[in-house]
Length: 304
Image (cartoon, rainbow, N blue to C red):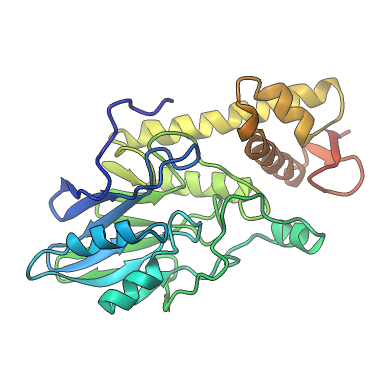
C-alpha cells in the first residue's frame, strides 16, 4: 500500500481534520518519517497536544501559535518515546505548564523475550530512542483522559515500541506509529516486538473505527482495510521467510537481502531488524528454531 502523492501539508500550519481536531506537521521529513511527524491538537478550549514531536524550535513556536484566544494547553500526551515524537514534550511543558502523559519511560512495556535479548547484549538498532524521556503522569491501558469537550481512551498497543499507546476519540483513533498513513510500521528488536505488534493489531480489529489519525502520513479513511492490509503484509513476510528457511538455514541479514531485493542499501539494516522480529516471533510460536543461541547474528532453521 503506497502513500498518497497528494499528502504534502505545509509544516507549521494547522489543518482541521474534524471539529476539535487539528494536525500540525513537524518539519522533520526523512526516509523513516515521510513528510514529518504529525502533531495533533484536540479540543476547543482545553487542548490536548498529542506527540509534540522532535526538539525543533520552529515546531515549538508553531504549536504555541496554534493556541487560539480563549484556549490553553492542558495535556501533553506522548504515544511513544522515539526521537521524532517525544523530545519536544519537555520544552513545551516548560512553556505552557501542562503535564506530560505517557505509558512510561522508553523501556516500559518491553516483552520478556526482548528483555532477555537486552541482557544478552543486544542494543537498539538506531531507530532513535529518547532515553531521557520521563513523563509527569503515567497512564494505564483503558484509562480515560478528559477535558470539558473531549475524552481520549488510552489503548496500550505495544509492538513498534513497548510503551506505545493509541488514543480513541469516539470512533476516531490516533494510532501514532502502530498504523501509519504511508507505510507499514517498523518493528525493530529489542525495542519492537512482532508478537506484541500482531496482538495489538488484532485488538484494534475488534473496534468499528471511522478513521485513523497516524503519526506519519495522511488520515486513514478506511481503517478496517488498512488493518487487514497490514496483517496480510506481515503474514506475507512470514511466508517469505519460511520459504527461504525451507531451502536452507539462514541469518536475518541473509534473509533480508533475499527478500528485500528492491530496498535501497541504506534501509537494509532496518529491513534486517524487521526480519529478526519475524524470526523471534516464529521461534516463540515454535515454527523455527535458532541454530544455537537466539541472537541477531545467528542462523535459524525450520523446526524439526
